[in-house]
Image: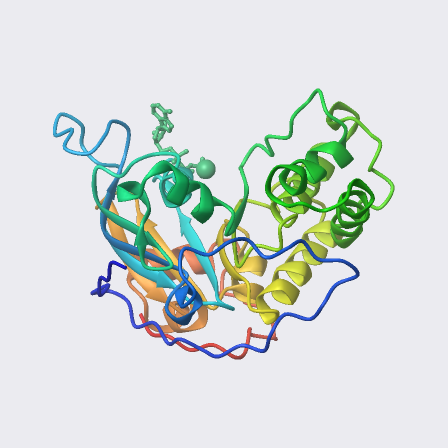
Length: 305
Ligand SMILES: Nc1ncnc2c1ncn2[C@@H]1O[C@H](COP(=O)(O)OP(=O)(O)OP(=O)(O)O)[C@@H](O)[C@H]1O
Ligand SMILES: [Mg+2]
């Protein structure tokens, strides 16, 4: 197991209650080692991201010097101006875009240094919702959600279906099982993608702008689902611009600065609103004039900038 000590991180690992049993659960994904859950789920160590590959010095990184970690039962929100590299960072964290420098550790294992079978195991420990949803258009919504269960578990077909229906119900799409993705609205597609990300009950979730384009009620429901999963011990990395989501669900906010091309803040959003760097405070006050986070801060997690 590899270790790194994120310099910018003041992670407070918090013991969480064990996950409550849903109607049916997928077999837990195989872990790289029996002791894997003890430490952070995810660590970024001296990460530089961008197009190109490791050692590709011709390219100026989109972001560099990224150090942070994700604990079980923590919601880490990534924010920053459009084009600053949030989706690229997410793709790097989930193993789809090798970093230009630094390491991505999943449960202590360096993802990009791992061999293919190890990477396959690690991939079963997280679900991803991409910014564009990315459902298979030739498969029904139900088949999309069942696919990870069919690929990575030995569940009987009727159990796969029951689980997929349960996940769809969780995101408010109980009636969408037989629909094709093309028949869904943009917001419904996003929620279906969240259901697919949840299929294997992964300990870690990556969500890229899950609320964008959703109506306020659907958006609030999604936030409630994120909090519910977090309270069950899931670690969640979420990209969002939505202030209500940030103040409602984020334990900590990671701010990527587009001008300096590095993280300029990491901490609880309210703390950053009060005493973060000026551009971060400005971002968090955006549109509300007097900085109006809602009245109910997310309790339970600390951490400092
Ligand atoms: N595959 C790619 N090839 C070349 N450039 C890319 C690629 N993907 C992203 N980029 C560029 O990298 C930069 C960061 O893109 P990214 O999608 O990570 O930004 P973002 O912060 O997620 O933006 P948004 O808030 O608009 O979603 C942009 O300038 C984008 O044009
Ligand atoms: Mg993006």
